[in-house]
Length: 410
Ligand code: HGY
Ligand code: MN
Ligand code: MN
Image 1 (cartoon, rainbow, N blue to C red):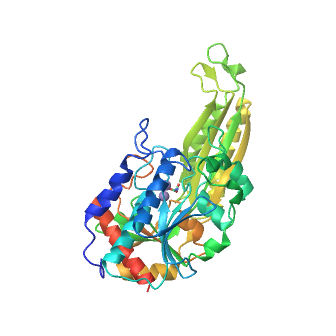
Image 2 (cartoon, rainbow, N blue to C red; image 1 turned 30 degrees about the horizontal axis):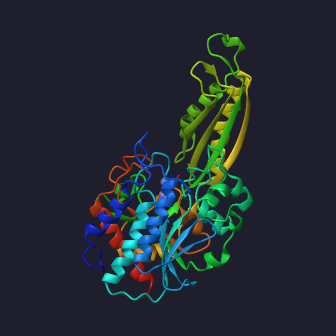
Image 3 (cartoon, rainbow, N blue to C red; image 1 turned 180 degrees about the vertical axis):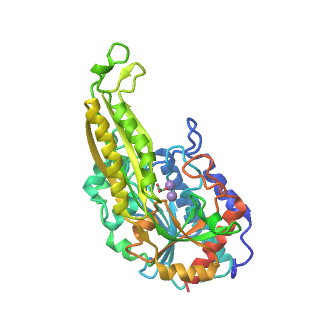
């Protein structure tokens, strides 16, 4: 970048990347399934701890399942980078791990440049950012910042009925300690998360740009909708006798697509639907499906969800089914630190773009000056096995992060 040495060669990046390539591969769907405290997550945390220790960093596992690697004594003027190691089910390799690996390699870069930080530096890995196992995104950063009740969190369970508390215990973390960690939060002076771009706003802003800076994160939430009908025989139950919960659920899936036309800039998705019992020749007794809705305004997001839910309720009334709607998470729009953004934009001379994806940076932003760097994703595809950033771009991303850290640790 403008100030840095020529980008670090790709060798170190490729080596770190290769370490993770086989961890948590999902042979059913392709891509990766790495979820909070599962075997892949534990293996990735061990890798991170080993990599950090090898660099002489002091590794701390905090009481909320997050891992911190410190260069210098933690203190309120620290500069923290990092991201998450978990994925969505069948997700890509870059969402999360790119930020963690880039943090470690950016520290290498600072040492290669002979930088002696005047402030403590850390690389953080946050627990279960995707919410892929326990259903609540940014679980570790929410626990640390006190934006989720720890008792509620401990009771969250995965599809197999394993609670967060039990999963934490199995991985050696005492769940009774989970909860707000003001001292740790106070030790974060500035947070900068590097992330693969999810979408195509960077390329749209500047087709030649490899790195971008985040300006804001849209409001977004998740709702679990349960439709209950009457289980019955697929072959012998006359149409007039049916109370098929799949019909209102299908109305919800279609309404999610139809209603966004009435809310410009909004998106709504049903990517997960679970009929019970799920037999081919069985009319389901109930159906659970999850709605992911987003818009820069939380009010518009809620209005959009209301419109979708009313379509479900309308169909359920006609089908003689009951509907229960539970909001699983909601994050308001977050504007990232403007001053920091301007400082980094001047330093790196790259585009500034919003994002429709949630991040731990969004959870920390109300508490500490926070910035995001995005690395070019040529296809824009994310949360899918095709998610990809070129090594050359990732190396430039590491160099940009090193420039940012060098600037902030003065
Ligand atoms: O779902 C999201 O927006 C993020 O990728 N966790
Ligand atoms: Mn993600
Ligand atoms: Mn992510």
